[in-house]
Length: 112
Image (cartoon, rainbow, N blue to C red):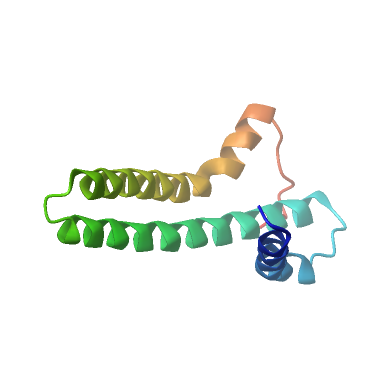
């Protein structure tokens, strides 16, 4: 990866992550859970949007393939990974609860 692409990627990650840490004054365990839940929600939304765009792109590839086996294979692969992305976005909503169950921790009653 070239240095300009790496810098652009880091800038994009910084812009995406900025709202999570802007008001993240962590003073208790509840603040950490709240921050993780906010990141999880945004991650799910972002992955869902990208996966939806990828499904539309796969459909476009299917329609414009005109019998080309290479284009059809590319469209199938794109569709498969887009569906994997949607599955990840849907599963993101249960990650915090799953990890909490595995670790065996409990939150204080006053946590949101």
